[in-house]
Length: 243
Image 1 (cartoon, helix red, strand yellow):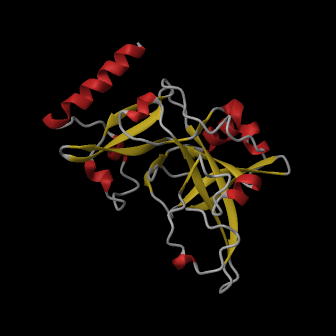
Image 2 (cartoon, one colour):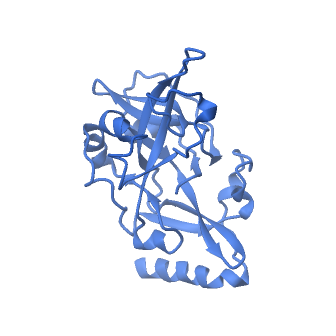
């Protein structure tokens, strides 16, 4: 699962990374260090060969949902690559409404003797991580309002991520964006190469979804307790092996 991420991109960075049309109105993007499911997030969509940045709810509500939003109890902020093309919640969006989800990094939790230890994953090259996503539009019959929402696609982990967790987001490279919008599937929904990401342990304060989203110290590296020293040693060994 990927249930928390960070978003620190500036408008010029977003325009450069996704080659957005220069006539779009600039957005004032605020750094966020604890983005949670149901929060509004920015995604890149393609309509009539024109890319746009839109705000959507993180947690997909399919267009055919007939009940109220409060009755949507299912966790739809992630969609598994193995079933996204066939699962009723996601299959229509998979066919017709793809998106790109910009993220500066994401959190994942490791089970340790001292409890769940959060780790922060970000790209090793310092660029933003672009996560494959789907979006949809749902109309609230009671109010007549339209809600745009999205989900992240997750897949099995590469060897590097597997040392901490058993899933990871589908991370797309810039050369994959066009193919993703065009409907490519299995070839893109695979683990990133082992050298794409880096990671470090962070404070357990981020274990709470109520941790302040504007707190940059949430992604600061922390020293692990003695019970977790083996995990720290493992990270150092992996880092040295890549040098």
